[in-house]
Amino acid sequence: MLVSKEFVAYMAREIVKKLTAGQFIETKEVATVSDRVNTALLEELSLEDRINDEVRIILETYSDEMRNSGADYQEMFRKVKNELVKKYKAVL
Image (spheres, rainbow, N blue to C red):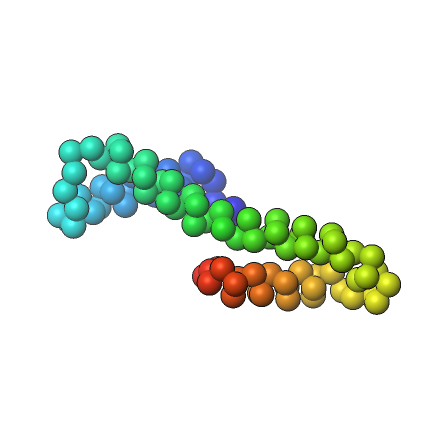
């Protein structure tokens, strides 16, 4: 993940603060809403990490074939990642 978990928590608090100040949402449990926003942000931001892990696992299974055919690891990583992004309909 490109940003720290502490910064994500800060962003969640600020989002909730601005939404309540602008009267877009109304809540008496600001801390609970902030926690839920934090969880949602962390899940979304860690999606790319999970996709990268899945790509590495896939490429490990084909490592011998890639080595024998002379395939470039970075190029294959990019191609497999793009396919997984399409599969999961992710926006990175």
